[in-house]
Length: 254
Image (cartoon, rainbow, N blue to C red; front, top):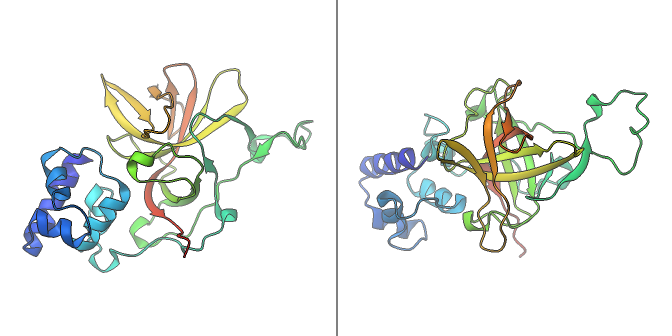
């Protein structure tokens, strides 16, 4: 993402006749913020920082980060969901390092004796209505349940919107992008649902958290699984990529 981000910031600055300092100040950031991104000093700018820069550069966050080739000048400040979205719209709560016993109703036979066990939680993904920039893709809402991405300016209770393509097209791992990951390990009928940043290290994709408050073990991807968006892990587990984070909404107390 970083190379695309730098190229597109430069492109938009040239088109608007702006320089790094003027973009930074108009975005409400430190004078050197954009220059640090362009030089590579700031390797993983937070989502809120990128949103502020995109607003000034009159394009969408998704264009700056390489998710789309369309600039959407007129939609730069649009959000995909109402800021008052309820937790009932959520497809899950994201908590790194926490495994919860889980099952999907469509995977349980009607005669399964555990189907009504109160200890088993059922999670259903609930597609949201997307705008035209995401035609052909599904959108899902998740609640950030911990502080595992605070270094990315993502806080507990933030609402994240993830884009999902059932075919797997465009869902491959790219450095710096944030993914919603469902992680299961052998012999444990439980699921870890978390938001993680992809980084390539030594030829392997590492799915990492980003927080000075706590350390969570990385998930190391070993290779593709048998289904689209599924992968085997280096420890013998399995993950499913439920989506790529494309929007963040935060409700502020006033």
